[in-house]
Length: 297
Image 1 (spheres, rainbow, N blue to C red):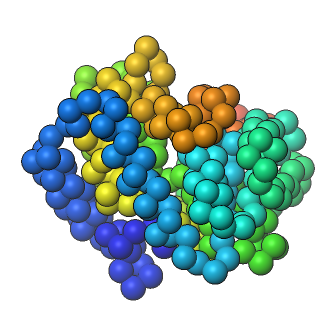
Image 2 (image 1 turned 60 degrees about the vertical axis):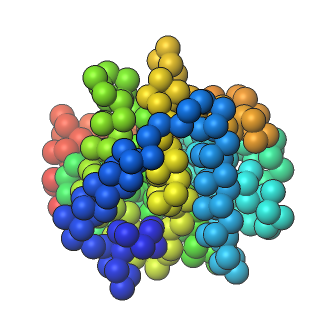
Image 3 (image 1 turned 180 degrees about the vertical axis):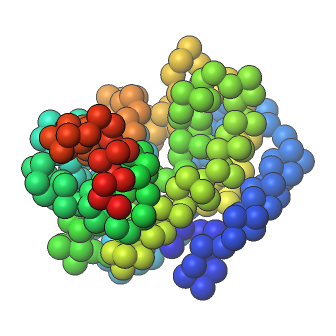
């Protein structure tokens, strides 16, 4: 579903297995060292990413979960270069920034895009589904899961059960604010990779299993992780611009700059599900989103 190192027999490996795997990659990167120049880093990272995309595009029918950001748009661009025909899917609530960005990306890249805008009642049903599935009252987890559930439902309605996602990009290319403030950016990237088991994999494996879907994640390919982590920290973040080396690679590969350099928005915010969650909490008489979610559980 994600990568061989995280899955065994269709199930998520134990947390310590993933942790040991990340440690082994860190040792390999330490042995190889940083790339000697940014130009070499870009060439090697792009080659690894292109190979990872091509390797995963063997499925007879797949789609792309498109947010209009650099990660998903870059994947779609590379798949187009391989002459694959595939649909893209984007979901959100009224005023969703990701929906608007996905429409722009689809137009510029000439992609076939299916969209679905959720009203508050329909969004609440998706949120309830996420709570029932994951049994948590954490607003971030539920906001992301609701976005994923909605996107996979849209894909399934169009007879697609295999989708490309950008999962992993934020960790290896330093896409979060915690990377900006970290004393050691790459150390924070390694810590984030380990943390994906608890923070991302458990949620996404459950969501994908419930939807009978398969998620393809080129950014979590072993060669991609190693190449990305051989990039010097200052190539990843410069003057507050996060994931800079990936953005430059994507722009050089042909992704329009306004897409390549679109600021990151977490899925729950870009889709608008977090905003709906806050509104629902108020409508139901709760001060906090977490309290509302606890009432559903």
